[in-house]
Image (cartoon, rainbow, N blue to C red):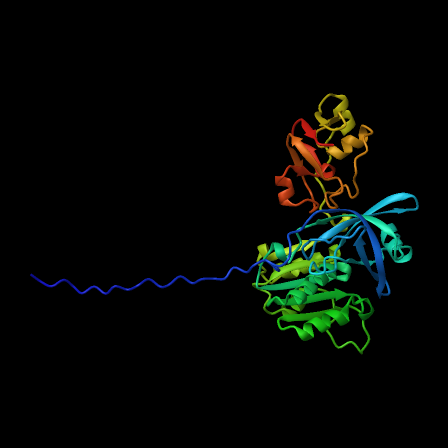
Length: 378
């Protein structure tokens, strides 16, 4: 009888364990909490020649619970007409009792002009929010790249201020593009953060400057991005700014082989939003007249509407003379958010509603077309 061959038992290699980053401020920051009500102006501070910072507090006290990168909808009566606009919160959620927005003057923009020229300490305006998912809290990672152009720096302000307050050990690179050194927003504060925090680097890029400017110049390009952020791959990227800037940044990111799932962007410009589907061949009014319409019951008011195929619920309500709160009409501001009691809609929103709100039965009538008869809690 022969001896069996000796068998060497080799233990399988231990699995490599990768730490899953926790969301920024996990266990410290409270979960976001809806706010809707009046706010009082505490301060208007000039930041640059065409940017102001507005500090607001809720009338009656209280605090805000939001995530860095989220925004509010503000409403004011301007020349006797209600005007609503969305503004990113530039203060951090770690300072919840006084909220700030950083507003660039828009030529002929009624709200930005009013905030710059008319708003005074003690004035009141209406606010609702927070909204939006353009937040590092939604995409936990160990390293980030925050790209911004012009006033698109506001979510970066909130994010960096949060990081500083929480002393989070994150690796963050900020690349901000603007026209000239005079247009740099909060440059001293962000440079101070970068100078006092390990893992934070801020790069200012201008397009026009005299010889005293020693930093990088020029428009966003793949070569420039590769030069400024050679360790781009692996970073979670957040981009905010005008449409042209974001288009150039996305092209540069793609050209450098950036991972698509790591790209996040946001814009509040209605003109920047993607075009909707083509209009139906027949007008909504003709569809309604022909009887090719869905029935929308407004439960609390007891009204019934006819909503033609391809027509939004908001448009049908307006056609029937029903006044419904609304602002952007593009699924962005969330002003018209309502509860869908029954039925289904095709909703093409632009960030004005959160997934958990949709799961709870909320929808935006301004960007939703019925897929059948509906009952809405209005």
